[in-house]
Image (cartoon, rainbow, N blue to C red):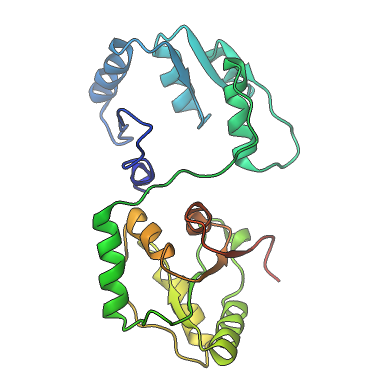
Length: 241
C-alpha cells in the first residue's frame, strides 16, 4: 500500500524517508547507515514490528520510544506498555508520546488534499454526470481482514434502500485488487449504481470523499479518510452475520 500518500502534503513534516522491504541485504545496510548518519535526537516506532524495532535500535538516537512488546522492548530506551484488552489503535499510538511529556485525547487523522486531487475529483464527478444537488453516497465494501467484511448482500440492501428512498447516487470505492468486493455488491443490487472508473490513489480518494454527502462501508482506510475530511460516516464493525 502506498501509505506515504497520506503524509505527502502534510505541512507539519520536513521530510519523508521510505523503506523498501524488497531491498537486498547490501541496500538494507546502506539504508541503516543513512538513518544513523542523520543523528536523530528521538525516534518513535509507531509500527512496533521486529523490523521497525531493529531500525529504531540501530538509529543511535538517545531517545528511542516504542511498544513494550515481549522480545522487542530491548530496542527502546523508553518502552511503553499498553492495555491488553482491545482499544482504538490511535489510543495506543498516542501513548508513545507520553515519555516526551505530551498527553492528548485528540485521535483525529491529519490528511491534507492538494489542488491536483481536487481537480481530479471534480472531473470524475463530471465524468459520472453527478450534479451539484445530487445526494452522493460513497460505499466501500472492502477490507483486508475477513472478519471486518460485511456480507455483500447486506450492502446491496442498504444501497438499494438509499437509491429508492433518497434517490442517492452510489459511488463505489475500492483499491487495487479489490474490485471483486464491489462486483459482489453490484450483483445483489436491484437499483442502479454509478458506473465503474479507474482506481484512484489514496490522496485522490480523500478528495472524492470530501465531495460526497455520506460515506458508508466497512472499518477500513476510506472510513478514516472520510472522517478526516469531515464527511458524515457510517461504518460496520464486528463479524459478518
